[in-house]
Length: 241
Length: 259
Image (cartoon, rainbow over all chains, first blue to last red; front, side, top):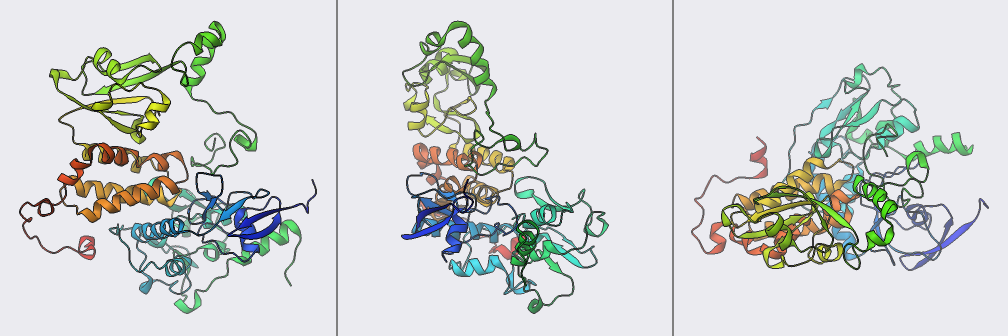
């Protein structure tokens, strides 16, 4: 197979060319078309869990997640429509109602992907009753903290921990609404034998669920794209100077 | 497949379908026990024999677990195309005490309710789809006049909420909210706005969930709303249906509930 082979498709009425094994999300991002997402993270595999990147594809009855669907020649994709906006806003509202996302007292206020998406989608209020769960905060690690109340279960931290750092500390336990991020065998983070304290999970977290201890709101700005640099350097020998 | 690989049992997005990339990324064929059980008799008796049973489009037989308000409960195997009335009245012996049958729920927790006036429909894939239900797991629950449809919907939604794996947001958080709205309706605390919210969520969860569980979780609500909408409307807050207003309780807000 020719590694440089490309496919051409139409995204939002614009002709776009991308590498043949690219996903719709990658092709759109390269073409400057933004598709909202919370669980996608460059450098680790995609899980298609947040359902925000759902797009319409002509000839396909179901909505497809852009992060996991590979492009095809001549594919016609629409990344925004009235119904997609409606579903995206509802998804965001469900997230806000699920746990305790109170921006004003959050260390990631202003640097939060969930907050930014809510802004972009005009989510000025939540129509559903809040769950107000009583999830605890794990502050046993000397450097980092984990506030389950702000977790959206995107599993970015789990994926970077296993597939970039290779430590395998973070995991998901429980099912449904009772799912939670755990360390090792569901023990306090500070007692973990496997955690290397690398901090990649904190960098990967889209909300304030994982944070650097002692950071102020102004210091919590994170750049998750540095994680992709590590993977590109390791796998493609591409070095950022 | 995830469990065999030693991973957490959560669905993966399709495509790629298991037939392309499944267990350990190899092409994988997945069948349920009922399908496999059909293979030996087909080999023994020939394809014509199997195709001779059933309807033009749905071939063979189907096993149902008959339960609910019915005299004879248990497992039955019927040729495709048998009418619901034959199953419920002849094999099941009707509702105990001669009570009037109200609806039959097929397809398990994510199936739909078929009203009594459709009892003469044949049981095949096409008819069940037309009636907003599914063959699904082969569950068949008979309900008589004493059954309240919103309570049935709440019961099945509770099942889906508990069974959600938690991977995708619409199913994980949506079933919780739908269950809460159904609970409000059953407790006569809901407004027409709540009913509209419920219908909106049914549409959204069905269209955006990652796997079949979430995509079908709203079915019991959608199908009971389709045939028994009046039961939901009657349960809305008394003052909305022209009745006396509920006694004014202490004002409740979300914040107070949390305390």
